[in-house]
Length: 344
Ligand SMILES: [Zn+2]
Image (cartoon, rainbow, N blue to C red):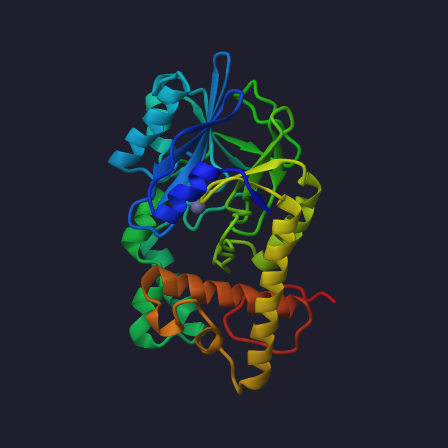
């Protein structure tokens, strides 16, 4: 892997926000602050071609984030009102969050992947959803006094419910509408059910969202309304992008790099290694649960230090591995996983 975002990497190491950069003709990389999060910022991409201005992953909505995005648009020679299209690679708040405000300001349409499903839609009741999630945590063996931490709460669900809905949906092989730029959609489910990447042949870049990042492994979680086997989807999605190895990778976090195929293979082998650890644990435990397996796995800062969202992510990632092993033919059953046809 060769890091091409030198200034971004330096900023990452110094724990500061990187500069706005013109990455290719008519394409700017714009860091938008992600407050109170170790990722620190989302890299939004602004593509300008004539009167068209497409914003990809506008970032988390905060007062400073709005200023960051406006500064990036200014560097590209446009204002918020000139935006003609808004695309999010997936629904997470650090990508789709600012889309609602940007749509209000510009009148541009919001574009999401065809298969993207959220934790909660505008039509569902957060209280019901939270109760169902608590029930699920119980079947995962989460101790009663930790359920409130691990389950989605009503306030968090209300926040997710306010995210912009898609005006337009795009699928594999589509060219992104609302843009004169020739951007091809590549469906890459895994991190979320309808995550998409974008291939820009004319500029030689591959916009990877959170599917492939240079330094960390993107989280893959088993979620109630999500994919019933997200890790399998993620591994398949990593295989399908290997052929785009000639493109410079523009991720949504950290820094730009070359070497997509190598990085995709690394991420795949890390995930498979983790699954092997999970398998060894369920073979060794009497009545394994998602909790008992997660508790025995190695975590960078130790399982005991995990709380709140980090605890939830650890549990739902463990559940994704258990489900993957199950659909790969593992005979060990663990409670609380969705029904899925066993293959192999
Ligand atoms: Zn993200």
